[in-house]
Image 1 (cartoon, rainbow, N blue to C red):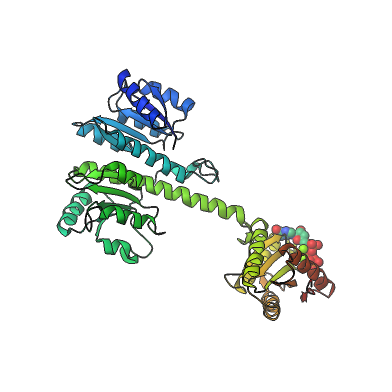
Image 2: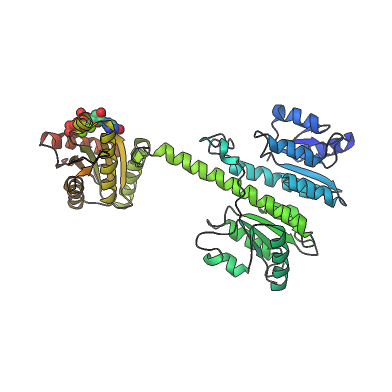
Length: 459
Ligand code: GH3
Ligand code: MG
Ligand code: MG
C-alpha cells in the first residue's frame, strides 16, 4: 500500500534514516526541514500523512498541528508525532492539538509502518464514492466540529479494573463512560435502543491471551459496531505487538500503565474522528437520497425507478413469479394548474403521491417518472391481484376531495395502464413491459379516464 508521507525533522540524519526505511516499505517519502517548510510543501506534495519530530527548529509539533487544523484543506490530515520517551508533556500537547498518534523514540519501525498502513486504509475507506474525501455530494461542511458527547465502553473481565478506569476517565472526560463484559458487548443490549458505543477500550487479554483481538474482529464484523473506534490496551507483558493490533484494525494501542490524562486525550481524539466519519457517511447517504428522489413528493425519481424496475424483472425471472407494472397519470391535470395555479397543482401532486404510497406495500416500487406520471412495479403479483390494487388506487385518489393550500377542495382522478411481466414471456425485457403499460394508459385515457386498462400479454 503506497502513500505519500511527509517527514518533518530539523536533523538531516533523522530525515535520511526515516526516508530510507519508508522508501523500503514502498511508501513515497518526502522531506521538510521545519514547520514553515512543511506548511509550504503540503499544497504541492499533497501528502497522505505527516510524520513530525516533536521539537522542530521553528515550532513545536503541537504548534504545527494547530496550524494544520486551522486550515480546512489540511484539518483532517493525519499527523504522527515522534517524541522522546520522557516527553510526557510533549505527548499531551501533541495529542491535545489533534495528533493521530505520538510514538516514542527510539522508534519501533514495525509499529510505525503498521500505524501508517492503518491510517491509509482508514482514509481510503472514508473517502467518498468518487475516491475523494469530502469532495463529492457537497460534503464540504461534513468536517465541521460538533462536540456532541459520545459513549466510551471499557471492555474488561476484571470488575475492579473497570471500576477504577471508569472513575478516572469520568473525571477527565465529559463523555459517557460505561463498563461492559465481552458478553454484554456482543449482545444487542449493550447500548440503549440503537445507540451502541462510539469507542471501545478493549483489554488485550480478555478471556485469555489474545482474546481482545478476537473480540475486536467480532465487533468489526457486525453492522452496529463496524464503524466504532477501537483502542486496544496491551498487558504488562506488552502483548500483542502494536503492529499486529494495527494491522488487525485497531485504531489505537496503549499500554495498561498509560497515564489517565494521556488515555483520556487518546480516547477523545478517537471519538471525535469517529463522529466526523459518521457525519461524512450520513452526508453521502443524504447525497445519494437527494440524487435518487424527487424533491416535491419525496418519491423515487426516474433515475432510481427504471433500474429498480429492471431489478424486479430480473428477480421475477429467477423466482419464476410474475410482476405487475403500472403507469399512473393524473387526469386533466393541466386544468388544475390553469384554474387554481401552479402551487395548487403541486399540492395535488404531493397528495396523490401520498395516497399512492398508502395503497402500496413497502416492497412495491413507486416512482415519479414524469410531471404528473408515476411508475409502479409490484413484485410477485399476478394479474388478478394487480387489477384489484390498481382499482383500489383509483378509489383512494378519487374518494376523498383534495384540500388545496387556500382551503378550496377538488376531486382528482387518475388513469392507470397495467401490464403483467411474466417470468416465461420469452425474456420480454422490463422496458417492453413498461411500453405496454404506457400504451394501456393511452387506452385508459381514450376510454374516458379514471379507469384501469390492462395490456394484452406480449405473448
Ligand atoms: P390527461 O388527462 O390527458 O393526462 O390531461 P393532462 O392535462 O393531465 O395532461 P397534459 O400532459 O396535457 O398536462 C400535464 C400537465 O402537468 C402539464 C404541466 O404543466 C403539468 N405539470 C407537470 N409537472 C408539474 C409540476 O411539477 N407541478 C405542477 N403544478 N404542474 C406540473
Ligand atoms: Mg401526463
Ligand atoms: Mg395527465
